[in-house]
Amino acid sequence: MRLNSPLTPSRRHLLQLAALTAVLPRLVRPAKAEERQPFSFDALSEEMHAAAGQPWAPAEPAQAWWGDLDYDSYRLIRFRDDQARWQDGPDDWRLLAFHMGWLFPEPVRLFDVTDGNVTELGFSTDDFEYFGNLAAKVPAHGDLPGVAGFKLNWPLNRPDRLDEVVSFVGASYFRALGRDNVYGASARGLALNTWVKGPEEFPRFSRFYVARNGDSAIVHACLEGPSVTGAYRFAIRPGAVTEMDVTARLFFRDAVEELGIAPLTSMFLFAGQNRAAFDDYRPNVHDSDGLRIVRSNGDPVWRPLGNPEKLASSYFGEPSLRSFGLFQREREFESYEDPGARYDLRPSIEVVPQGDWGRGAVRLVEIPSALEANDNIVAFWVPEGAVAAGDAREFSYTLRWGELPPDFDGPLAMVVETRAGAAGVAGIAALENARKFAVDFRGGRLASLPGDASLQPVVTVSGGHVVSSVLERLPESSDWRVVLDVAAEREAVVEITLHIAGFDERLTETWAYQWVNV
Image (cartoon, rainbow, N blue to C red):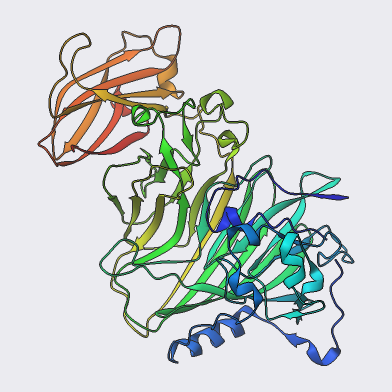
């Protein structure tokens, strides 16, 4: 069986750039009996709870030759193709490591958990290949204090080939793939004070305990930061949709202004609503094109992503959230025309809470960006209530990674396109301080209705007002389009929602959008 690395663009910071180290297979070093220790999630949680009562002691970057690595020299390091752990195991899992250095100066320790016993996985320079001028600088047989992170391979796409399924590298970042996906959006263990007063805090996973269980893998992790410690459990089930059951137990050293649970990170450069701002032959460039929320009453909301001129933040309050996620809904290659990046194959990520998370809000942060190398989209759950020093919180949820297509055969029509442009009537001067939005819906009961059906666009606008609205069925199609002209004062932040109703019922999901009239 051969290993395969997924198609990954080399221009994304942290996660994507770390993937430049192509890591491939080796045997686990045998451990002496006295080196094995019993393991449990509860014991790990107790350890991290106790650590929260101690002053924060940041990890010291190792003073060694890899401390001088930059982007170009880091690319000259590869894990040896005969060194992957677990080759002698009863299943098809392989564990592969990332080298320390460059963006990853702090050591991460890895442990194998087999039959409830723990063995630390040691790494040395013998596990890696060093190319170019770097080869002469690296000591032979030199033990490493840790690694930058790791990934797990498994026969995801073909039974005769091991493909990358999940990787953990950099702070608390991780990402995964469903079948036939390439890497795009990612997740984090926790978000703390993201774009609020003061600097954002990035706690890190410092230790991982990894176990195999047939077709699934179990990863436990220690989270450490100035304000928080935590114990995490990830139960990973790869497939067409790769699922992770996550439990996060958090223990706070200090008060936190804003806590972000199940944070997702992605990139949105341009699509139909802001295409004119970019001189690019490609029709769309994004890892995700929308935030999807299923509200406590079951109503779905689709919020197209944007690339604003100024930092934008939106809160979607809910008494008891059903799900949220960053989705790549547009799946046609012709919508991107990029055979290298393959944005049409990027995974959607959905967060499904387990148990009642209580009141709170989904927060969406959109950061201005001129380059697709920048991850400029963040989404997470903000629970209601202050977080004080000494608090403990636990959250459980399932992450779903894959294509996750919209259900056009369900009762509600789904948004398939959002476009924007100058307001007013074509052929005459555009309306000032106004914007036109064209939103297309597909599927559901709406698709079977004739063009003269008695339907209404239901629109709400906060911070502005509707100038005009038109609803029509598109020619030679079962899709329907709503065209809105919305006006507002200069610098106004305008929140818009729209759905189509008829026959005393809602016929579409809700389209939501934020427009800033700058």
